[in-house]
Length: 375
Length: 239
Image 1 (cartoon, each protein chain N blue to C red):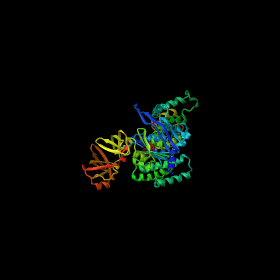
Image 2 (image 1 turned 30 degrees about the horizontal axis):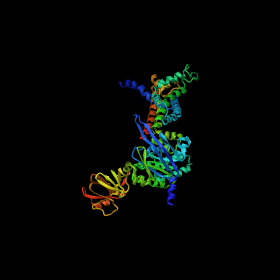
Image 3 (image 1 turned 90 degrees about the vertical axis):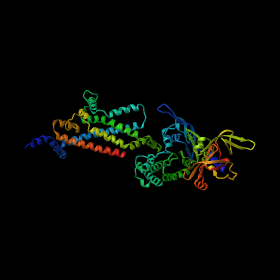
Image 4 (image 1 turned 135 degrees about the horizontal axis):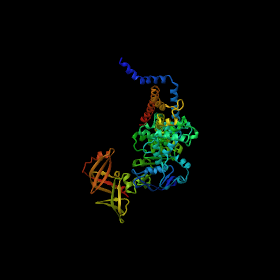
């Protein structure tokens, strides 16, 4: 049964298909800037795809191309089966009217909240009664009813972003593009907008494309995550795979693997044990490759203890000294030096309190072979 | 006994002021015809300019096209065009031997309106263009992404920039009504026909008839004051 379900989801028809998108332009000083290079991407009908990447990776540019706000220098885009290059202005408008774009910074029109929300319906020639009904519904949803006749530009940033999101949702678009729309929001606004998002995420008729530089947000919202760096998609996969099996050092670092080491893989064909030599230490990994490798271990996967742990599930037990501790509120980051290397271990405040660690103290760090990720 | 000559000396100006109030509040027919004509000429000229310059200016602000920079420079030059030279150009066009001479429009309110259209058109065009251009690109993108057609986008941008655009129109009207060079040359300051605030003030001052000049001057000043209240209000609200 499961197999059938995954099978159909794999075959799910795509909503947007981008092939070999490139964007480059010449700057006034003559430099050639590449924003996107040969990027291909398929967005399936109804899925929630998160594009994650650092600032300047090309996230916004990609989103604007998909939102038909700018054209790529090269490459093709299909909306369903329509190749966008070949359609006329009328069809283009029809497609654009099915897409919504929410900016990073809130953008609203210089008029009242009510008129802002009514605008997308007005230009679609909705009947007056319907507009009124939809606007008041949306106002309630956004908890902005008391600001109905307030000038939208005079609202606070969070309230303004709520209006902007309301404008984008009121005409029930099929594809919604969120360009880091959750950044710069205070917790109460964030909570409210996340509530709205939750409905959208579950709605199979709506396809969401969200950009962010926050890995936690990516896990929260994404059915799939695409890692974008320097105009290229480095990895696109289910969130757990991105986090557990990053295929690239950039991805690993970006999604929070702080323990990245360069080592040398040795596979013992007799015992089947995979060892990786990192400087003076050797660790065991469940999978490995011969020769030069990069490995990473998530800080949460490492356990810290005063005595050598008894559990046999830990294949790797190393002895080190506490070097530094950072109090991050809910968690503590403990840096443990093992020989010439430093491991970052993330422990909860509770664990911190029971362990009573002090600087320079000898400790054991242990982690499973399966938690060693080979890049 | 020494005081008398002084009071006699002061007389013309004082008399001028009292006469001015008299003229204004007795609703002197001539003074009100001058006021009416001035408003009519400048009002019609500004209105016609608005009808043409507003769509054109917003289009130019929205669209990229060839020679845009050059054309913008020309418009900016025209915004500061000396009105006397404008008057001269219109005079040459409308004079008997000019290309439009057979229309016999010289020394008529129509000629004055034409001159003032040439004055106000570039001002409204330039300010509208700049106003639409100054609407941030993210608002343009918002309007597009919400599904605006080209026409709806244009209309909304004009609405977004309404404050600067209205300022431009008021400024153009202010320039037109206080302008003297062009209306003097092409209107000819004919009594009951083409005499405006400014041409009347010049003539009455030269004739030493301060009453009428002061009365008209006060109205013109009041008008400028009101226009500036409007402008300041618009600009402070913007900030």
